Structures are given as structure tokens and as C-alpha cells.
Length: 398
Image (cartoon, rainbow, N blue to C red; front, side):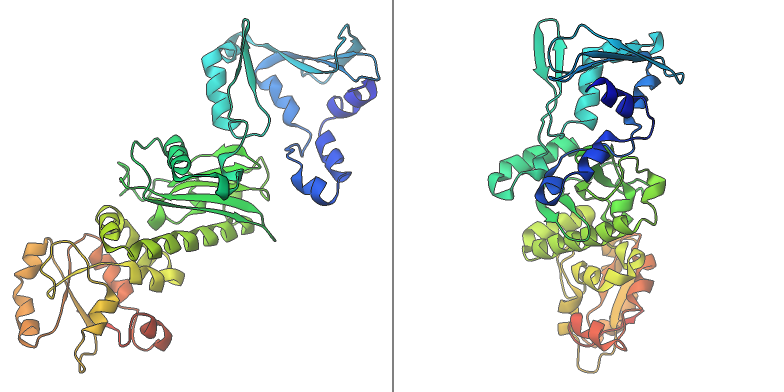
């Protein structure tokens, strides 16, 4: 920068040189610019840890300049001895913030917040120079370049899981809103799976800058077993959990992620053996969607699996469609029985009358079933479209 530019860009708070530069671009140049400045205040965060900041800068066609400030509202400018083109920002750290001089601490911070920026971050220790970030966002690479092993390695990187993911979906959306999503379905359940207050496993990035981990606003609680990330170009870098709530862009992204998650489960359901493993691990959580997500309850209902009196296996495998297809011509409802265990359900005296009439009964043994049964009861034959989607006649009986 020249002296005039350093006065304009550093001496004026809330004036963004990046924003002004972007305004001069158009077309593909503006679209492809990977710049993150917007508000003109990011530079001043240096004073959180520094009691003085020095900037040495030189344009090739102007004398070198030194800018210095203690963050108290004043700054000094003078000529500098710098001979090479470029800019140096020097932070004079407070004693209580000297931890940020430790190489291990710097690596941790860079890899957490700037690992996927397109610009390499180099850490110099003595005579050694080390690039500590990947300098390229994995999810921005074309899918044609990525192999299964690449996706699995990245899954383990963001989830800290030792096992591979079961399936994944990588999507880039352009239009009214622009974002990239990468969704993974794990094989193994986390220890806090049944805690509805835990915030899920989705990371949020804005223009490849890490914003927050476990962003609960991106997926509903019944899909909290999903892992992955969203990188948006339409959210501000200063976004907080409070700003995410009731944000229209976030709501649109959330709706799309729910659809893609259910699409993944639909595809997995076409492979009965793999879906049975998923259901054993996550089925009880997915059942919460019958209550939590009325808009998608039909899709979720088609993904549910049950034990029944027509199946001897202990592994739930009966779908509502299969049950409806076996209903007798004079049967008006789907019948289910709840019990603490599958053995108790199979031996219930309440089944004797149904067995005598050759009628199938679903056997529900999860703690959530009595709660979810009320929602299933609202999927009735009066709604012809919903009924057809479940296979014909439908209704729920006790």
C-alpha cells in the first residue's frame, strides 16, 4: 500500500478496502474472487491480543511506509526502510497472550479456522518454513477428481471417527442461494446419540472460513446422527447461533439438507442388509421425525421398520407398505401392540383374537413407540394421497 492507501484502509474504521475492490469487479471476476473482507473491522481484532500493531508496507511504485497504533484511537505514520514489495503485520503481544507465540497453538488455530482457505498459511520456526493449512477446501474440488478413499479420509478428519462412513452425498447449489454441502451417514453411533439436546454433527463454513461446529440449525434433531458440513456464500462471516435462527437462507439450506438426507436413506433402503444395520443403530432416533417433522412424516413413515406377528425374525424388517399389502379385504386399520420387550409382545394375550382371525399385528418395543404411535395414528385413510403413498388402505388401530 501507498501512504494514502494505508490512511484510507487502516486509518478509517469500518471502511472495507476489500469491499470497495469487489465493487470494481463484474461477471466471472466477481463470482470467482475468493475474498472475505466486508465490514472493514477485521484488522482491529489484532488488538484483542496485542497492545501495539505495526504495519510495514511498500508498493513497487511508492516509498515504504510504517503504520503503528496502540489501539487507543491514534496512529503514527512515517517512512520505513522496507525495500521489497509487500506488507508485514507485526503484533506486539501482551504478556498474558504469549501463548500465541507457541508453534503448536498456532498450528491448532490455523487448522481449525483457516485449513480450507485457498491461500497457504506458512509458519516459520527458526530456519524452517511449514505450510500448516491444506490451502484448498476439499469440498470445492470437482467430484470427478475425488475417489471413495478421499471422501472416507475427509470424513474421518472432520468426525474423528475411526470407522468409514456408510454413504455420503456431495452437492453444490447455485442460484438464489449458493452453498456446497457434504453429508455423511456414519456406521457407528456417537455416545450422546439419545441426547436430544446435543446439537448434531454439521459444521458451518462461510466462504471456506470455519464458523462453528455442531450447528444445530442445519438439521432437525431426528437427523442428528448425520455428519458433514455446509459452506455458504450468502451468510455473513460474523454469523452467530442467534443470527442463524429464523434466517431465511438457513431455513432453505436446512430444508434441502433434510431432503438429501432422506434421499440417502431411500437409496440405502434399497439394500435391505445395509439398511438393517443402519436401522439397528439409528432407527430409534429416526422415529422422532414422525413427531418432529409433519411435512416429511410420509417419507419418514416409509423408512420405518417393524417387528410383526407375521415375521419370526428378531430384526425389525416389516415396512408399512408390506403390512398394508397383506391386510385382509375387510380390515380397516393397521394394528400395533406396544410392550417392553419383543418376547413380551409375542406372548401377549391380546394377540390371541388377531391370530384367530389371521390378522397381522405390528410389535413395537422401543421407548419412543408409544409417543410416536399417536403421530402414526394421524396418517389415516381420509387423506387419499397419503394413503396411496403408503400402499393403499391405511389407518391405525390400537
